[in-house]
Amino acid sequence: MKDLLNRDYDIAIANHPFLWSETQACARLLTENKDGGSLPDNAEASIFTSGSPSTQRTYLRAIRYRLEGVPGDILACIAADDATLSALSLFYVLLYKNRLLRELMEEPIRDDFLSDQFQIEKPNLEAFFENKRQRNADLLSWSDSTWRKFWQNTLKSVFESGLLKNGTPLVLQPAWVPEPLVQYLVSHGDQVSLQLILDPRY
Image (cartoon, rainbow, N blue to C red):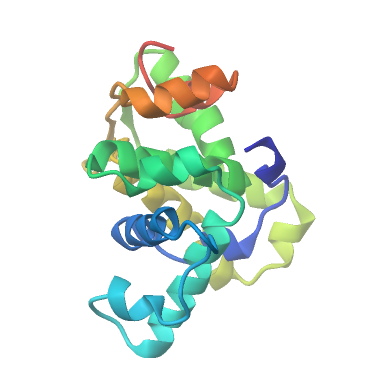
């Protein structure tokens, strides 16, 4: 996974929704395809139940990009029937591929978690994102609409992984990471990711 670490703010990785169930379906196709290790050309027909053909193709490209180079053990975790294991394994991949997501988890969310503060005001998170933009020339060069979509999709991935719950204020939802993902991360010396996924044991 270290080879997949993205040090840039990449529009391609956060320009789409979390797409958990669709990514899970893609991971299953990849783990079942022992020969080529790639998705069939017409994969969107068996993966998406809604959306126009154009949207389906766009989302499928995004999923291909997310899963490119992901180790087989992690693909198997994403493909698993255990919804928590699958969603948190996808979240783990996004931590590597989305720099803004890593920073969000490392700074305001992890800081509150370590301080036993399990409630977060949404305006504070919006201020965090704006501060990131003001300090980075590349982000400042993006249009307001592009930037807003980028940080909103990044934040939504925390909700859809189950680590954050809507409310006023927002509520952190730490949980023990399922054992297959824990075993992989510990065996690869990546306990830091377990901290970013908010496993209270780490």
